[in-house]
Each structure stands twice: as structure tokens, then as C-alpha cells.
Length: 60
Image 1 (cartoon, rainbow, N blue to C red):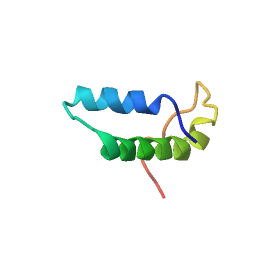
Image 2: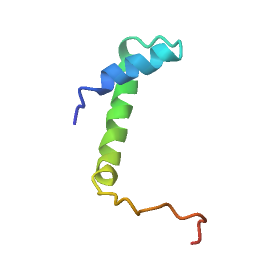
Image 3: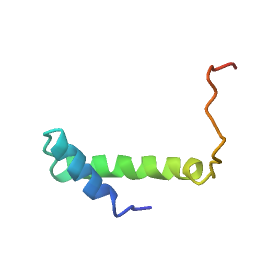
Image 4: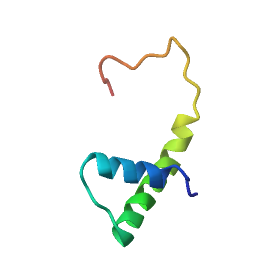
């Protein structure tokens, strides 16, 4: 699943940090961000209610 916003994000983030990514290096970074977006998609699809809050303390 190619996200058309990812290349622009990678280029902008790299420039912001003073990095130059070219060729295969840039392609690999874009691929990883596309994978991350695919992994995060199900979580981001869950609706959040106004009264949902994170737990203040982790208790397994």
C-alpha cells in the first residue's frame, strides 16, 4: 500500500534534520514509513470518545 504523502514527509523530515537521502537510501526509508503506516492503520481506525483517557499507571 503506497501512501502518496510518505515521500513528501520523508523529504521534509530529512531536510528539517539536515539530512540528504538519495536513491536507494531514500527509497528504503520511504518503504519503512509505508510499512509503519500500514501497521498503524487498524489502531488509528478505532474511534476515540471524548471521555477516553490513558491509564495513569500501567498495571498488568
